[in-house]
Structures are given as C-alpha cells and as structure tokens.
Length: 420
Ligand code: MTE
Ligand code: CO
Image (cartoon, rainbow, N blue to C red; front, side, top):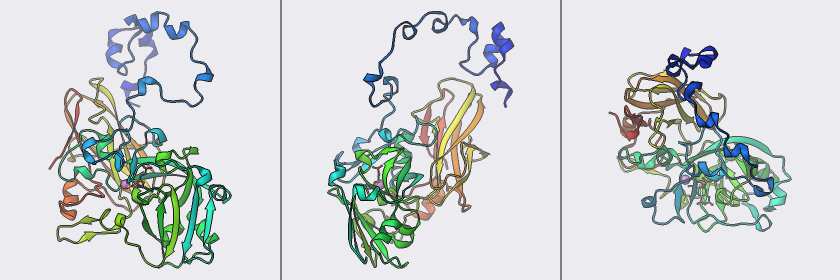
C-alpha cells in the first residue's frame, strides 16, 4: 500500500499540520472543529422515516441526478429513441434496472403476464404456444451479461461529439438474468436444430424488431429471461419476457418476446439489412456483425465526473467488456497512448459481462490525456480511433469500439477529445 494511504493514528490524535497534508484528502485532522463532528445534528435528534413509507425504496433525493438522460436532437421522437445509462456515476458492475438505458423503436409497451404468449413455429414437430406460467416451469439459470446497443459510441465516428461518458458510452447495461435456455424450448417443440437452420425472433410491440439468429448461437447461451437483478423485468426492458443474446448486439435482445420461428435461412428483416449494417468505403455493406468486440472506457474522471479534490490520491475507474468472453487485461494511459500501465481489475473471470477496473494514483495536478485499452481472452486488443477508421471508413454508425480519450486539465475538468 502506498505510504500516503496509511491513516496514521498517532498523528491524527496530535492533529499536526503535517498530517493534514499527508493523509488521504478529506480525512482532515480533528482540530478543525468541524460542526458536523462537534454539534448535535437534526438526524441524531429526531426520529427518521417509518418503514410504512418505503414499500419500494427509491434512491435518496441527493442522488436524483443519477438518472438516464437522452440527447434530444438525436432522434425525431422519444417514442423511437434512446436514453443513456449514467455510467459516470455508477461503480461496480451491476446496472440497476431503474437507470439502465432503454432503446425502443415504437415505445415501451404494458403487457400483463396473463396476456403474455410465446409461439414457437416453423420447422418444428409440434408448434407450441407458451404462457408465462409455462415458461416458469422449465429449469432456469442465472447469468450476468452486458447488453450493448450496436449504436453505442456511434456519434463519435466523425469526431469527438458528446461531452459525457453517459452519452458516448451509456448505451450499455449489465444485469443478472434469470431465464430458461432457448435450447430447452426448441427441444420441447421438436425443432429442427441442424446447424444450417436459423431462428427468427420477434417482439409483441408495434415495431416487432425481428431478427434472425443462427442455430449455433440459439443452442449455445441464449436465454428466454423473465427476471433481471432478482426482480421482474421493468416494462422498458421487455416485461414480462425478453431474449438475452450474450455478447451480441443489443438489437437482437428482443423485448416482449412473442414468437420464435425456426427457418432454413435468415429472414433479412429491416433490422438486419437497412439497419445494423455499415457501409464501407467501397460501397459494400458490413453485415451480420453480431458480436460486440472488446471495448473499455474510463468512467471517472470524465466530463460529467471532474476531479474536485485537487492534487493527491486519485482513483481512476472504468469499465471493460467483450462479446467474445473474458476481459483479461486493461491498460490505462495518462499521456494519450504513449505510455501504458496495467489497471487493477475489480473482479476477473466474468464472461460477456462488464469488468470494473481501477488505477490508484497520486495526481500532481498536471494535465492528462486519459485512455483505456481492453484486451480479451482471444488476444484481441481494443483499437485506436485511427486504426478503426482505416478499416471501416467514414460511413459507419455501428460497432465503434475504439479507444476513448479524455483531456483532464490542471483544474480537474475533463473533456472529450481525439488524439492523433
Ligand atoms: N425489442 C423490441 N421488441 N423492440 C425494440 O424496439 N430494441 C432493441 C432491443 N430489443 C427493441 C427490442 C435494441 S436496438 C436494443 S439496443 C435493446 O433492445 C435495448 O434493450 P433495453 O431497452 O433493455 O436497454
Ligand atoms: Co440497439
């Protein structure tokens, strides 16, 4: 442990000036006569809120800024739109449902469990219709996975656009899902599961958001999920049942899942032709780009999360993820990618889930160009923006997983920039 981080009891009791300078910022010496320490406060003088007033707990009012936000000019209407997870203000890896980004093509719908039906048809021995109660009777599993919209960071292709990690990288959430493996339902219907077959999945909302999934993936780790973080899915995340397609683009995670058709070739729906493909320089389309490649970003400090404590101990914190499996390493640069150091991972071994990383440092007040670079178990390393543009041209929207740069000035203010 760094000397500076060790609280010194002897010095604390003496309250010498030398200690105030040498201790963790904010852990001030006792002689300051802080009224919060020396005077009786209201909260210790009166009784608090009774349990009858909080049947379902909401964040305390002082945290009311930690909310999803949208970018009004981005879409024509909030019905077919996106809001963003406040990742600058969260820590750990699990995203609370209440602030996990939402993406709808025709608004969130209210669908009662009693009215819920899921049909499996097409190349099956017996077409079936499941009620919600039927799905609950299959053996279930729990897994933590990230869900990232393929359009996450899509506004940054042209240049540094949005001044906040919530807006540049907040189309992602990470939850513990409870659900039934899709393969169990396919088996129940006697589906043709030969490897050249596909499943076409669609939702009960007006957009239906239909997508084709190759059989190999459908049989692998796809879940028909009905709980997230232990409780029912929120309406906006597909209540009562959604598809979870680990590591693959969020668009395939069909909400309000209504039908699974086993088909002998991809349907080529709107969502997988005109949308969720990228036009390359030579005019061809980059198509069937399902997997979300390794990516990372520093969440603090960042434009919405400046350094407010001045020089001294500073915790740099961020998130890394890969649709190919585990994050094995994250490197952090303070000089725009010239030198790198390996970050400390909060927890290792999660597959297709967010990994938290930290760099604990002493900040001397010098400006920094902060970057992070994720590596995954395939040996893949997150590319720079330049490298990505070289490969993908200037016309892309989706799958921007490039290294992000924040310029932090001597005052601790952070800004979205590009380095070249
Ligand atoms: N499913 C349906 N039925 N309708 C939709 O509009 N949007 C998709 C996908 N599933 C969508 C859908 C897109 S583009 C994404 S990124 C994810 O849902 C977002 O999931 P979330 O709203 O839970 O964050
Ligand atoms: Co999406």
